[in-house]
Amino acid sequence: MITRGLLDQLLKSGQDLLQKNTGAAQNKGASSGIGSLLSGAGGGALAAGAMGLLLGNKKARKVGGKVAVYGGLAALGVLAYKAYGNWQAQQGTAPKTEPQTLDRLPMAQAEQHSQAILKALVAAAKADGHIDARERELIEGEFSKLDNDQELQHWLHAELNKPLDPTDVARAASTPEMAAEMYIASVMLVDEESFMEKSYLDELARQLKLAPGLKAELEKQVRQAAIF
Image (cartoon, rainbow, N blue to C red; front, side, top):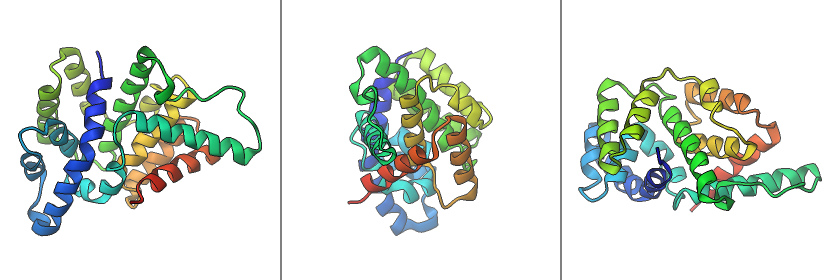
């Protein structure tokens, strides 16, 4: 199962999708929905359609600024690397080794990080409980257009149908850097004004064993990157 290319497409699609649909939502108000996100993406923007379905209409409007900053998968690693550096500087300690974030890894290791990040994204999209059975089918359909890897399709189906469990999500993090990247991806999708989603995010950070100072720095990096 190869997820790196798919995840990179999804992240790169965020800007165009959310710029289009934020404007559409402002014009159409409550009449906009999952169907308009899918059709609004355009025939050539399959990744944008998949990202839109994963986000949901309400969430797309709220987190558009955060998602739009990501030019691709490597950006997650860059933000995690910056957060590590700032956190260590605040502690007054020099790192013993350079953080091995996604942007600094060979392909095989980057693929492991990608799978963990995609797992975190799917879970974060479910944090508000908005994905119902119909939406799961639509999401799986859009993902199948992007990648016909049957193993990946089965994996996605299983992840979408799992009960939301931050403990299960955190198990995918085999390194501290992976945990940081998964948390950044989750912050990117979660609406922190929602009590349910913020609670999920806090519990995920606890299960990922992120130090409070590092957690705060990771959140800060996402906020700063979202400023235009």
